[in-house]
Each structure stands twice: as structure tokens, then as C-alpha cells.
Amino acid sequence: MIRRHPLAEQAAEELLRRIGSGEWTLGEKLPGETTLAAQLGVGRSTIREAVRELAGRRVLESRQGAGVFVIARQAAEDWDKVLRKADITDVLEGRLAIETEGARLAASRRTPEDLKNFRYTLTDRKRAALSAPDDWYIEADMAFHRAVVAAAHNAVLTELFDSFAPRIRRAMIDMLKLDDQHRHRHDQAAHAAIAEAIRLQDPELAAARSRAHLSAVRNTLA
Image 1 (cartoon, rainbow, N blue to C red):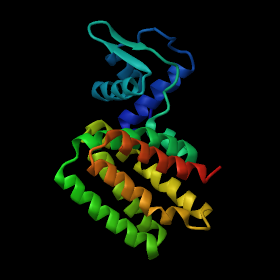
Image 2 (cartoon, rainbow, N blue to C red):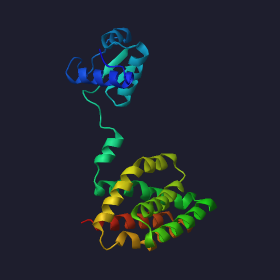
Image 3 (cartoon, one colour):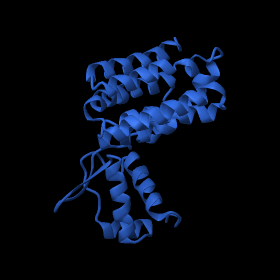
Image 4 (cartoon, one colour):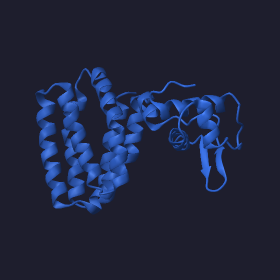
């Protein structure tokens, strides 16, 4: 019998262990809720939660009217773990994908409020770059980049950036430690150029400037 805290999470891990050990093979149907609940010493609702979790991790698949089937022997690595393991270059390449398209869309969709936000975040970033501690500077820099993505008015891109944010923050801390000449603090013009291209409603220019900026940052690590 498993321990009772937290039940659903532990039930999911126990099912995953048993699947990994080969107790149920790929494509095989799991026993019913009542049987599994008795085996693990938990309620049927806990089993349902555990199955939902493993379905979300792409280990199980619930087929209406047929039951629950094994579709993988182990869980796909979740997004948070991937981001935690990513190195600086991986993060910058991810940002290139998100922010270049974000800048392109922002040039077509930006509103007067977005332009106002650019002015505010650029001013804040410039001030922070001059003398603020690294953590303040990082937050100011990220605020501008998020404003660009938010101006695309695409909920998925914004959510991707936000989910990326903790790893971006850690990568920037690492970059600043390597940057003894403080080059990253003195690239205000590149940020202003991105904002200007968006203001001018030039999607290709905005995308090119965003790509050039992040590529330049990546190249300093070479």
C-alpha cells in the first residue's frame, strides 16, 4: 500500500513504476478503477486523478467506452524539466523562435498602449543598465522583451514566453557572470531599434532586428 500524501501523485508514480517494470506492456489495457484502487489502497477518485496525470504525461490514453491503455513505458520529460536543464545557448535559440515571431506580429498588431509600454520599459531598462544590481537589470530587460511579445496579441506566444521566463532569468545571470565588459548592459540601441520597427509597422524589419539582437547575444558566447 502506498503512503497517503499526496495520494494522486503517489498513485501516478506507482502506476508509472509498474508500467516501467513491464507489468503492463505497450498497448495493454489497465485493470479497472476498482481493481487498481484496491491494489494501491486508495479511492477510485484518486485513481482517476492519477490516470489523468499520466495521460497528460503521455503514458496512458483513456479511450471512451474501451478503458485506459498504455501508450509509453516512461513519461515524456515535462517542459519545466527541459527548461531547467537547458544551457544558455538553448535558451537563446528558444527565445529567437518566440521573440522573432512575436516582433513580426507585434508590428502588425501593436496598439497605442503597446507603444506606451515600450517607452516605459525602454526607459526603465536604460536606467537599470547604468547602475542597478544585476537582478534589477535582468527584470527591466525581461520586461521590455515581454512587452514586445505581448504586443503580438497572441496568447500562446505570451504563455510560451512566461513559461520560459524563469530559465531566461537564470541564463541571463549566467551570461552576466561571463560578461566582464558589461556588453549586455550597453545594447540599449538594439532594443530601441526593435521598438522603432514595431512602431513603424514593418513586420520584416522588426523580426530582423529581434533576430539580429538575440543572435548577437548568442555570438558573444562563442
